[in-house]
Image 1: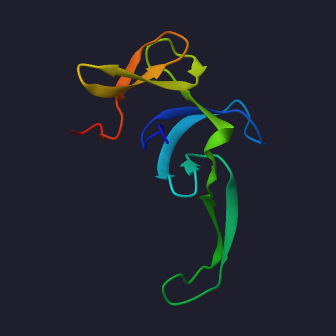
Image 2: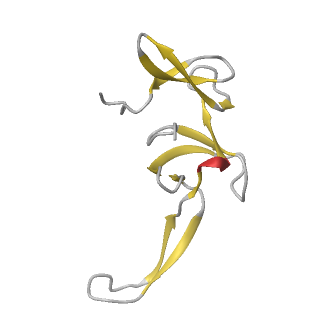
Length: 110
């Protein structure tokens, strides 16, 4: 999977269609992403000493990676990703503008 944590994606299907948000986590084994503010559900919390009020906790649940497109930082459009070889390394490439989006398999901090 070419989408990484911290990327900006646009949701293409479901109740949050058209929403642009940041990826919070990626599970490449199951092909799912957790996107900020998308697919929110309520978890009902019973009263306890740790949580004396109880109530409803809202959190994001994973969505399938096929339901999102990466927003290119160069052209600002949602597009599919491609891979290109440059200088002996694999690079993520925007399919619309051919803009470079970083190396494949490397985190942004490296």
